[in-house]
Length: 347
Image 1 (cartoon, rainbow, N blue to C red):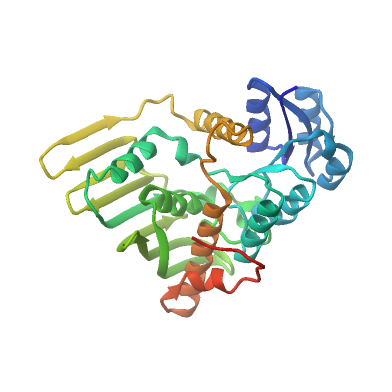
Image 2 (cartoon, helix red, strand yellow):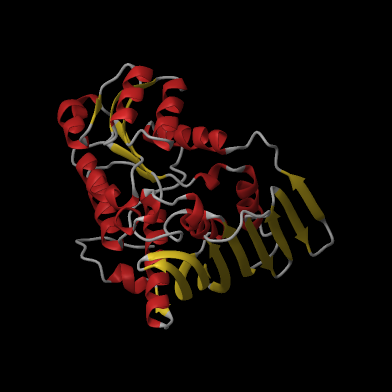
């Protein structure tokens, strides 16, 4: 029968993931849950499987028939849903951000560890060839020691998401920083294989708790060295090109990725330029993400985005808010060290 999957949240991305699962070999879609009647009706019609209004009813009726669950719901709902699934011994793929509080991230990791369950977070840039190449070049020392990083992302986010849950902090956990900005923060950590240590930030709000624009300076630790990163997250500008970019400077070269064009320059005057093929779109990355999740559960591959990365992004995000609110430099480790934990060890 293969791997048996359930999905909590089957509108939009959740539906796409269910459809992708159904097209993969040895994967069976068992059931789903969604609060929206039209999403449930479409799921049942498309996949010939039951859909529930309440995820707990789904678990009560089908947990024993499931191996794993995918959670694709508003951010602040992830924690309760994740813990409920872990307590039923289900592996998890949680869409980003994993959670919106550091204590919640620690709790999920502890429960998953106790039960030997796989928890992954849905950051798809790990599966993009440009990001894979950037990380590889940094790892092999092509640009020497990383000395500075500048990255940005810009969208008409506040305009495009009016009257949706994404601009309701009760469901989103904040604003652009926890939404698209989360991808940028995670990519920074993963590309450079570094740990964020301190942060200084300024944040602009559209209304209380709904952040739109952020300017952040982060001290990153990579092995026994450190470097500074400048991060700009914009949510109320025009959709201009480029909308996302990364500039990484090292002691022996540099990397630039903007507009689907990757430049790698080494100090011996060797320069590479590559345009990323158009077939590497969102659907392709989504498929690679789900394939990795399935492969890691079956022990065939390592998980690309383990829960520990979700913890790091949540801690960094909360530290950004704290720095902006207090006007001070914030130590990110303080957010993790202050959590209630039995035996949690952070890297």
